Amino acid sequence: MTHHIILGAGPAGITAAEAIRKLDPKASITIIDGEGETPYARMAIPYLLADQIEEAGTRLRSDPEHYQKLQITLEKVRATAVNTAAASVQLADGRSLAYDRLLIATGSVPSREKIEGIDLPGVHTCWTLADARAIQASVKPGARVVQMGAGFVGCIIIKALIERGAQLTILVRSGRMVSRMMPVKASEMIGQWCEAQGVRVMGKTQAARIERDGDALKVTLTTGETLAADVYLSVVGVKPEIDFLAGSGIDMEGGILVDENLRTNVPGIYAAGDVALSRDCLTGERQINAIQPNAVEQGRIAALNMVGRDTRFIGSMPMNVLDTFGLISCSFGQWQGQTGGQGVELVDEPNYRYLSLQFGADRLIGATAIGLTHHVGAMRGLIEGRVKLGEWKDVLLNDPTQLMPAYLATAQGQGDWSGAQDERRR
Image 1 (cartoon, helix red, strand yellow):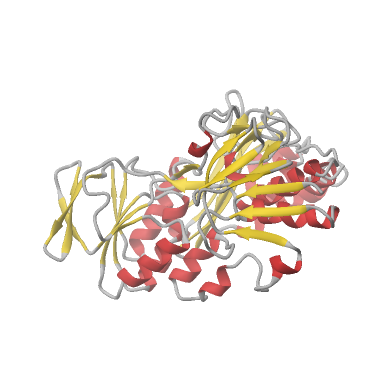
Image 2 (tube, rainbow, N blue to C red):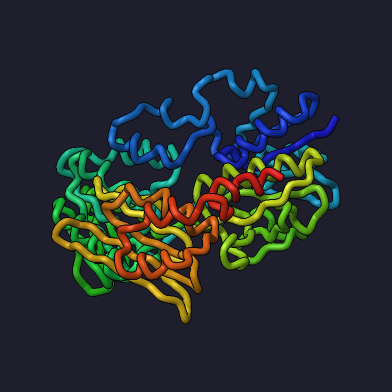
């Protein structure tokens, strides 16, 4: 009987375990859940913070007996090392578990600011259920919250914090909100939207140190200004959780290097999700694409290969859909464009509408939108399908709102998104 061990109980790990069970009813499957929680979706945390759902609503599978019914063992303990020579995983409780196939899907952990006071009471990250519980207990109506960071995670929790009654100040080191997924003008518009909702946004600064000041915190900024706070949220990004693999012999370059079958350099070991350094389907370059759809697809592909079904992962495409206090924005592919390419930008600041299209040769390679949600499917289909636009390229350069007609006229039969999905299953 083959024993599959899966490190990580997020979307990649759970999807892989379920796929293995479907393909091999007799296999032994163990999931190592380092957080000790019932497997849950991190993307549900903003809804939990806004009191829109209970904790049960964050779970990846609603049936409390789901894993037991599938004969999947959940070990609520952290993995501390992988011994590739002995084909075993060392656990924090002292045990060692042998594997025949191993999937590393440990996801991401928050990056930590290296400043004085980062470990003080009242200072939190916002990544886990434990973090969410601490924020729920701390952020009451009138609470002064200083948030360092305005990336994806920082922006999706703004609404929840305001709805909890927080007086929110956001520090943006780069001066641009979601600067890693939006062009300059789009970033500016999101910042303006937040300020219009009563959020104070401070650019080109960050915390230099945090101190206790009686019952409150005193946050000293790099500008010298000080802010009083009841809660300090550090949401400055995440990184792959791979430190425990040091010395294992698994090749890593900021993430785990995998081939087109999501195999590592060590036979029998695979990686999926936020830890996997795989190919970008558009550029062919290696990247970590830390989004849930990618984690789910990689978990499925890894499972197929773990049970002997040779299946190629054709690569992932960067894409983000963001809800910032009710303002919907998105970016796909090479949203920043490429050298020698062409682009067009449509800006309607008073109505918070924005659209940017980027072209390479006669293909759409990247897109960004704010407040134009009806274009999302066409954007993704044209970019991921690598659709040749022909005369429609000039149409879009003159009027970028013609995305849907362009998609309907060109994508069918040209290897659009549905065709790309079919290719993944071969």
